[in-house]
Amino acid sequence: MIKTKLAKAVSMAVAGVALSAGATTASAHVMYNTFTTTSASSTDGWTRVNDIGSTNSTTGVYTPPDGIFTGPESKGNSGNLVPWVGTAGGALPFGYAGSSHLNWAAHLHSAGSSLTVSAADALADYGVAAEIDTGAGAWLDAGGVSSTGAPIAPTGWRHQTDIGLIKSDVTQKVTINLSTLGSFNNNFGVTVFTGMDTNTGNYSHHGSWNCPTCATPKPLTASNPFGTSGLAYLTHDESVDALNGLTFTAVAGQIYSIYLGGNGVGRWSQNVAGYSMDITTSAVPVPGAVWLFGSAMAGLIGFGGRRKAAVAA
Image 1 (cartoon, helix red, strand yellow):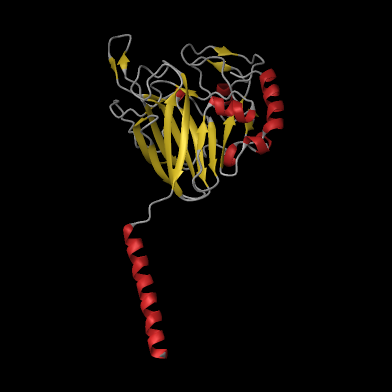
Image 2 (tube, helix red, strand yellow):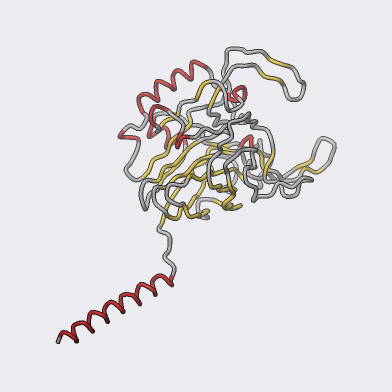
């Protein structure tokens, strides 16, 4: 939930820090959503806020507008845009126009770039306390037992899943490592999609994903798992931590969506904690056949030069 006074304060902060020389580097920079919640269990990363009232999904009771602008009331596509830091004028990063929530975006400007995504980084670079956290079972929880005693299959949940974007200006390998800053263990699940959300329809932060054993299976390899548009599954890793990273090849100019959360610990709403993400890069290995071809061509060129010299003599 974000209040209008907070929104005004954040807007003033954005005016002073957006793309400031001290907040970016020549090789890379991270942009952050300034939306904040009043409860750790609430969904963060809303890109718009509105005050249209809401209807309780359980009781059906409608609550009229109360002067407080929230993310859920915007349905992701109406109301006021939430300002970002690290972008020109507080705009959304990379021209993002989708309805789903979005927490951060990383731009790798050159080969060998590296970045850290965290609340501490946002505070150090922009003076804004970005909400960079996730749940212990957001990517895939440990399942459980319902109130009737029926087993609940392990499931990922939109509610606490954090979403980020990565774009590299050069083709290179990108590796993601994650560390928790709170109580749940350092075991994260990360899914990478090619593209970013382009759906501008109503968005709900309620719903499951990553549930291969559910009655209606939701595979770990599904595209657009949040009902979005424009996302094509690329890869995932179920055991990302500070030492074991997920690596993928980022093609120059292509935008990738990163969905992350805790894996296999408790329920999706439990042990919400901050995290720190390290993004490192390396050159795409050149296939051995290319080296052999290059060596052969160099040999032919050298032989041709020697032959011409011999003829001239």
